[in-house]
Length: 153
Length: 156
Image (cartoon, rainbow over the protein chains, first blue to last red):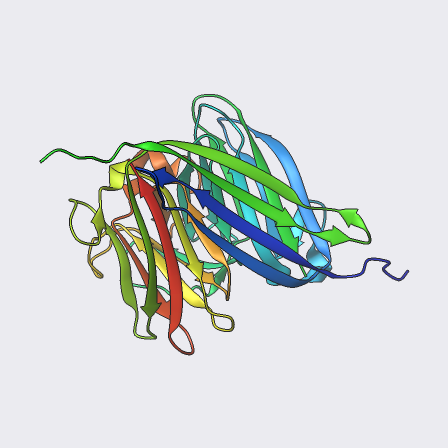
């Protein structure tokens, strides 16, 4: 079997619009991501007991359903589609051993450019030499929907 | 002194454009963020020795109130080199109780919705925010050579 997919360049544009006292204070950031040939786009309901959103593996040979090759990941966006409640988003490595969590308010997004990270309970700065293998959501008050959008080469 | 700034609603739109084999695979999402009265819009050079790029605590020069922050975007403006971004609960580098670091490759963006976070190295992966913490310091350390970052932070 030979692939029929031709890799392409993706463009991610983030636009902030805000006017304070009739002065434009907005901004914009655009990045082009070359050689994208895989995309993962999922809308998933997240329970208060926690729901796995996406997994990453170190090698293409062990990728599978809902599991992406971490080294090939160029972009990750997690968006809370709820209009009221927040969701806790956690990113962890394999055991899990190292893990961090962020609060994602209603309607807001969390983005990353790779799966490289580290987390600890002491120190000043870490070397991001660990790989995120799982991103999980934990809804707060009641279940929420989240959108997961990942681009891979 | 009375403020003359009228807080307003900001909108943030993220658009991913991708066409694979003549099929649109893109997506888009827009968030409205109400009651924005303060913002930081800054381009900052970060060295290989590391620099603090933003602090959160009692308001002051380069310091925003952590409880008021509603949006954080950090974009690596370099076209080649990556930068490590560290979020920690200690307002100055050192003595952090919780911290995490991510790798931000050239051109890429790290986006957060506020300062609530937690970080552990003992595997407690659920409901971490319940005993959570607040980001008090964001620092950056360039890899090969200095890079420029764009900071865009909005707060009430």
